[in-house]
Amino acid sequence: MRLLAFDVGGTEIKYGIVEDALTITDKGFVPSPKDSFDSFANTIESIYR
Image (tube, rainbow, N blue to C red):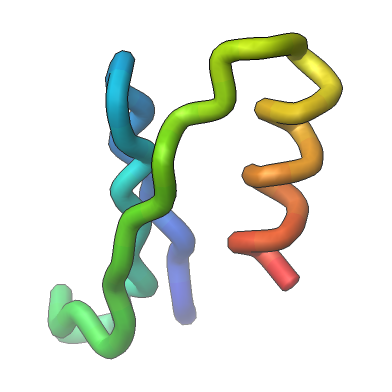
């Protein structure tokens, strides 16, 4: 199983993909959008894709 985990903060959204053995296989961060909920949702969706 693969899980996508988020840490949403005021300045950055950090993310990582965690595999079965609790191994992080991918990670990164993007700036937190502050202008609207739609921008936030679009950012989360782009990370997911």
